[in-house]
Image 1 (cartoon, rainbow, N blue to C red):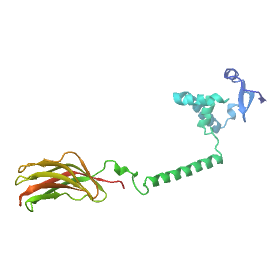
Image 2 (image 1 turned 30 degrees about the vertical axis):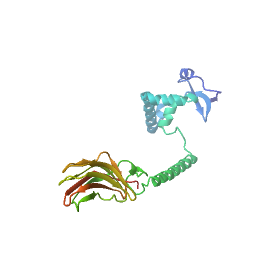
Image 3 (image 1 turned 180 degrees about the vertical axis):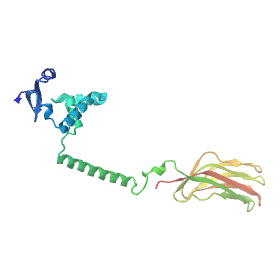
Image 4 (image 1 turned 60 degrees about the vertical axis):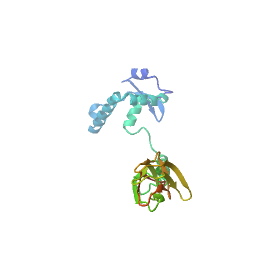
Length: 255
């Protein structure tokens, strides 16, 4: 074996194939006579290993373009040719792992698990089968239909009212439709009001409605905890049959 300063070009190496073998030993280039072993000296295990080596060598030319280009790129900055790198990869000797590599990997895994635990805690997903994000209930969430009909007999002449159920805690109601009418006689006015815990808000009215004339509510109205909607009748006759219906849907609030 003779040490040389650098490996010759690939064309030179191929030209001496069968006569001189050029290779690296611990990163040092060298040349030696082409190794020859009488075939009758080869053991069955050696023959089997040689056959496997040959099959692997042939498979290099069957690589997909993307893999072939990857080996070509990897060999661009080192003395080994792409095929040699491929052979090392197949035999699992492309990279020799050290204990430092395993310690680094374990540290990264530990840190990643800690970040994942923090994320699960932030999403409130521990011991659940779904991710729960703060504010997700602010997206459209249908909790149920709101459909309510109110009817009564006017307690006396003058002003009478039919009031919806008060919105409970933890819900928001969207009132999409409402109507009111006196089924018996004419009134001087119909009016829709919204009540919160402090104020009364007037939304729509109809002056001098005749008997059985309906006042529909236009628009969508949001009712929060403690709110209620009211249909108010002015100028009723005692004993009049008065009606109001409220329709929409219930939503949850952020939890």
